[in-house]
Amino acid sequence: MNDKMSDRGISESSLREAGRKKIIIAGGGTGGHIFPAIAIANALKRERPDTEILFVGAKGKMEMEKVPQAGYKIEGINIAGFNRSSLIKNVGLPFKLVKSFFQVRKILKRFKPDAVVGVGGYSSFPVLRVAQSKGIPAFIHESNSFAGKSNILLGKKATGIFVATNGMEKFFPKEKIILTGNPVRTSISRSTLTRNEGIKFFSLDERKKTVLVFGGSLGARSINEAVGKGLDDLLHAGLQLVWQTGKPYIEQARERIKGREGIWANDFIAQMEYAYAAADIVVSRSGAMTVAELCVAKKPVIFVPYPFAAEDHQTVNALQLVNKNAALIVKNNEAGEKLVPLILGLSHDENRQNELKKNISVLAITDADKKISEEILKALVS
Image (cartoon, rainbow, N blue to C red):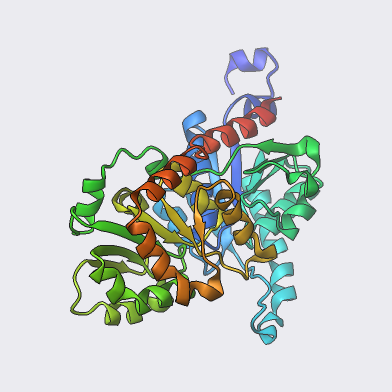
């Protein structure tokens, strides 16, 4: 500390309060948690470039790969969720939970964050819980219209709760709720790509309508099987596909498309901005972040909600658009029978496509990341 600062009696803690902030962002598991978390981190850095950000995620999950690729440090903890399909796999869960709390305490002690932000996923809960016990400002981002049990519990002591939709007072204290919308990746929200640029990226035909099919970062079995079964019908109708299958289905998809033209298939699309630019029609799950991206992309969409998500929140997410005539919906257990005929029908109905595009575009929010970052930084200097 220089002499002038000493003469004014400014303490190190005062300097830190006025200067650089250290923030932990916790969560992950799926792209629906990771990409908005990165969007928030980027917005914080744009607002205050000297902000130091550390991510905390679950070891073995995709955040351990995606976060470093985005240029941020991440520390992994030993945490897992409850396995509903195999009870025997939950035997070690209490041990992992206890171990994760010890790991989080060490991370917080070493990093000394000014605030923590939870975006959902296994690692969110222990990080926010420990931070709250230490009096560290803790923020929650609840992306869905139906809040998860962990976030409801954490919300009681949260500094602020960022939500995407109205009516969240039934889950959280009203005075802590801040309506921001869901952060969309800047590569998508600020994209200026043309349709032709998107088509060329996937080496497809500019003259044909393109159907983008994806089930989130991990894929969707019902969607994949329906598309695989109806592949010839789609191609014979003059359509072409950009098909993100997820890892479990990619080998089947590659086998299915052998000898066929007009299909780009892979387990993951790293640059979704090109996929959205290329798409004339989209088929997808209805996770909160996917919904937010599709509103920004302004595409006609057919949702196939994952019915086993907590509290069936994907169906709730989809119906919010369907009820505003901004999207179509097919039940998961009816996808095999109804999805491909609905795609074909929509592809031939230009008026319906334009109507859906017009209505979904009204729901787009492009500055949620900025709103969230501003609220966090404002709370730390108030």
